[in-house]
Image 1 (cartoon, rainbow, N blue to C red):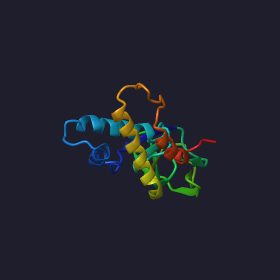
Image 2 (image 1 turned 180 degrees about the horizontal axis):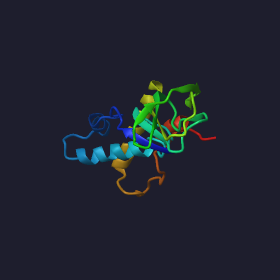
Image 3 (image 1 turned 135 degrees about the vertical axis):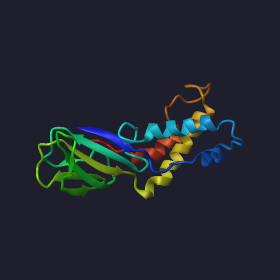
Length: 179
């Protein structure tokens, strides 16, 4: 099984203008630096390798199953939609593969109607429920603000935590816990 992001996020979670307003930064001198902090904060949180274990923006993903597919699988990211599957023959020709899908909480399970011995690519869009977007945006602002003010790993008289405590509290209930 190989999970690959095939489409970038469909929108910015926090635009540069909002970050600049949050930090009270005037002018364009630090736009490049602030943009890198935004991208770093998003990368820290986002996707299967991020600390949340979920997507924080809508993105297209593909799950490659090189040995075919017969049994039900749990898609590796929560909150998914637009699920489809294709088989891929030896010449690289794709053919649609009908699937059955069911949801269980934030997770989606999928299974082919008929098993396939050919390699399969399952495509889907993973995202985040609209009701937690405000909390995610605030967490990104807090992380960017902390990194902007504390440009070194440890500042004098500052806590050496990886994330500001306020951001940790916002993010804690949003983490996906693997059981």
